[in-house]
Picture (tube, rainbow, N blue to C red):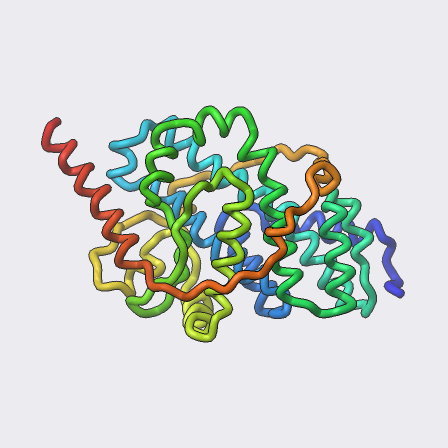
Length: 316
C-alpha cells in the first residue's frame, strides 16, 4: 500500500505538476518526451510529443509574412487559439493519467481509481487496469488516441466559437481541401516522414491519422532516426528546428515564446464521452502504415503558398 501520505497529497502533486507542464506548447512537448524516456512502454507519450512539436510549428507559421498577408490578425489569433485550446485540453486530461501510472509503478499497485477525480473517461480507466494486467502496449496506445480525440470533440471541434470562426471559414476549408497541413516526423537528415491531414473535424479521421502516425513512428526504419532527432534537437516551436537539416532555405519562423503569450484557460467539469457515444469498432483496430518521405511534397505546397504571397505583393 502507498503510505506516509494521504490520497489528497497525491492528488495535489498530480494537479500541481500537470498545471506546471501545461503552461504552453514548449512545456507540454518536453513533458511528454521526458515521460517517454522514463517509461518507453507508454508509447503514446512519444506520439504525443511528436504531434505537440507539430502544433508548435503550426503556431509559429501564423507569424510568417505569407500567412500575415492572407489572414487577418483576428483570423490568425483564432487559429492559434484552436491549436492552443485543443493541445491544452489533451494535456490536462492525459498527463494526470501518465502521472498516476508513474505512481502505480512506484508503489507496485494500480492506482487508476484516482483518475475519477480528474474526470477521465470510464473507458480509459478500464484500459489502464487492463494494461496493468496484460502489458499490451499497442492496445493502450490506441485507447489513448481514441480517448484524447474524444476529449477535444465537443469543447473544440463542435464548440460554437471554433466551429463558426475557424472550421467553417474559407482559410481552413481551403487548407483542408488542398491538404496543406501535415504532421511531420523529422530526422537529423533531409528525410522527413509523416502524414498529411485531411477532414480534421471528423473524429474517425483523426483517430485513423493518430494510428497511422504511431505505426510510422515505431517502424524500424523511422524510430531510431526520430529518437536521434528529439534527443539532440531542443523544441523551440520554430521550423528551423528541423529545416536546418534540409537542403532548402529555412522559413525563418520565430521561436514560439518570442511571439505568443502564455494563455490562461478555463476548464469545465467534463462529461464522460464514453457514456454518451461509446467506441466504434473500427477505432480499436490496429493499422500498419508504410513510412513515406513527405518532405518534398510538403515543401512544394508551401512554396506555392509563398508564390501566391509574392504575386499579391506585386499587384499591390
